[in-house]
Length: 459
Image (cartoon, rainbow, N blue to C red; front, side, top):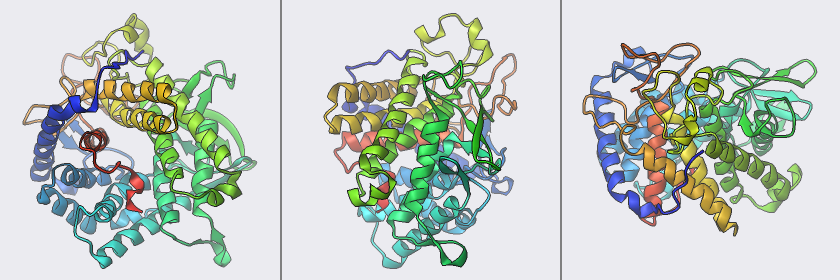
């Protein structure tokens, strides 16, 4: 399990954060100058150069959102203008995309970040530009909420696999739905029937907590506190849950660690969002106490599982049930090894999960749970202590990626395997690089005593 370093302090990262943003700028510029946009969105690297491969253009918001985060961290106007212009030119189709569950990734990372910067006074206020960003977020959240499947216990935003499919990653697209609600959007269906966006967001969160997360209560013989399933499958004729499944993990009965990390981060940030709502807003959904309880339980469980099933340095292997792990001895009792001969690590899961740990730690500390809060907070810093240095931080000026040893789709064999190796290593992903920037900005704001960084800073 992670060997939590309780001696780490945010200020200890000051020098490394400066190095991180210097490298980040180089990587963004390298992609802008060399990547062929005719190929589609950059997804992951092959021999250090970004290429595209995937089901949808789900990483485009991460590409341009990275420039916006770079400006936020460094105040370099070049990156603001790049992010702003590319959002205007390229991102409109993502607002109305009815075929994906990724609106929180693409649109909150671009339109949402630009609106947040304006709200915070980091960019000049312009009424029409503000309205433009708000309109994009309103429509994006409504379109995302329209991908709706009703089941016996409520409902959920279904994945691009179809109406039977609940993905654990979609917890982070709840950001788009609740932003649309909080911006005052009126979502309407047939006969002008008004559809409550907050209700849809909360029902999806509840479904994810109930079906995607396990709590050691015997749902199956592999049920452990905090284990997650990538996909939950339902019978859409009668609304019954059928089974766990996985698209990118090893099986539905093992834990794909990037899916786990999406849950960690998504539940923690939604707990923070609840503080923007009045008690009366939550009364139709059984009240604040009930909503907080299922979100907090899921956040605690997933963060606990990550801590207990990750090597001591905080960088996980791509799936906790990957078959090659059985040949690696006590791999949890030593630092992760991205160059081993059996199973790859996934640094992108670490970048996402670290943010979840930090946010949950801060949330609990503010509630007076200082001991528990410190455990999660220091675990998050421990993960970052490994992630923001070699062999995970990419210092090669010719490599377009920022964080090395990311995995996209191990079962499909989509990741580059170097000559002479049995496993993929040494490559980066657009989501891994983006979330490393996101958590670095989060920590930098803490170090500099700046306003606390949230997705709902756009409100």
